[in-house]
Image (cartoon, rainbow, N blue to C red; front, side, top):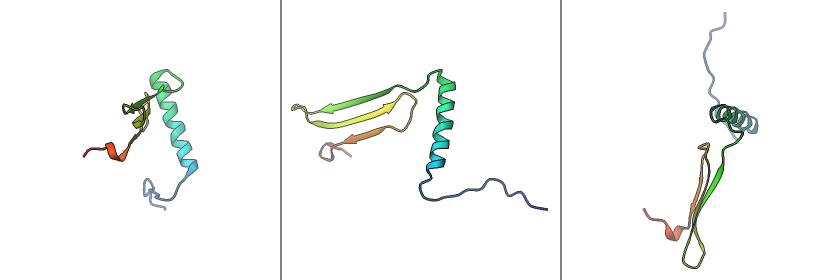
Length: 77
């Protein structure tokens, strides 16, 4: 008789297959929940008086992890 030990946790290096499987599952869930094929993307850009990039944000209305960048000089604690 084999004992059922329950779920198995594996920690390892990059796993493209796992990343794809999780992305596909999240996409299917979001499409069903929102009724849209993909969340809208949007950006926010901050420039100084000369038009140079100070910082910016890219994100999706589906709530995926956003990307935020602010020049080191302009960061505040």
